[in-house]
Length: 82
Ligand SMILES: [Zn+2]
Image (cartoon, rainbow, N blue to C red; front, side, top):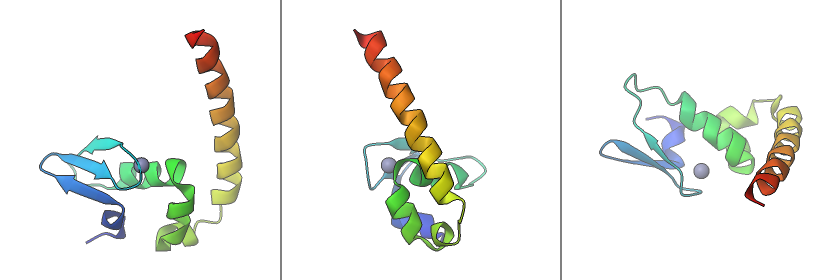
């Protein structure tokens, strides 16, 4: 069983993130790439504790990029809501 399942729970056709309220559909091809992407982009700290994240040296740079994107996105969202 993949290490990813330490951070997600599957129930019938849905997959639940242990770290937030996100739900995913069980992929038909059984790939866990989407779940890894979620862990990486939303829970970088948790991701870094996995064997995959530990070996991912690009994470630091990507994390900075992601934060900048999120900030830009949040600002946009706020403007739209107002
Ligand atoms: Zn999550």
